[in-house]
Length: 343
Image (cartoon, helix red, strand yellow):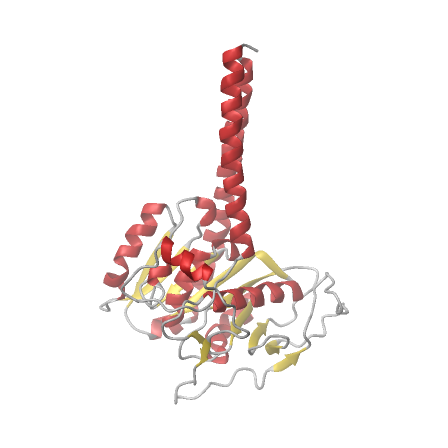
């Protein structure tokens, strides 16, 4: 190899190692979902990188989540398959959890269950006659400022029964006014991941749905933690809201996911979120916007089926597209290295 080739090769390797190290560090940071405490922030002032450093420096993790347990509305709570059945702290599906004996039978009751082992109440809808030798899709319903977990699960019960879907919802939790939701994020995602380990749930078919204020939180959560979900649906509201300044869209397709957005005709949600449509589309996010005229349309079973079917199709297609893109990039890189040495 000529001397100039050795110099070029050395520079090429140095640049590649720096790029690879930065990418690896970024992936590890996303995977660990490091969270900060609840801190004050002004709604009119975006959180700057300098402010983020101050947050990390003054970080004090609370013993409990800084959240509000909001009381349900006076309209009452609809009946959901009677009283929820309590489950033991762990129900592993085919894998062992230290200190817990795995359950090998399918005698676990279906319907609305309260899953024990968490600081706050967690509810899960389990489809009837599910089998341990196959896996199922699961929908995580984002916390809502006014609705209980039972009310949220009731909204999707008909769909879940017909399509054999697990539905997960926490109790009425909401970040305290003037705080960041990082602690709630961390707790909610840890609950999701533990439930996935207890039941036969397909990790590649995890969907996030938020309605009204829950849609504002879901929009933020899905952008910040894209690898935790396959697709997300925002109903009634979208990214504009109390978490808007924390929404930071990614440019890399591997850090994106498809969004289904349903907004009411004649309302202001469409105009308020137009800047977000433009920003996310500009980054390459797959968005599917649907208009509806009355609130009753969101309650129609066919509408719910269409939302779920779109998430299933778009989520799987997007994952395959990203995988193919990464494969193509690796192929081009290997060819470039081979051509370099052939000189």
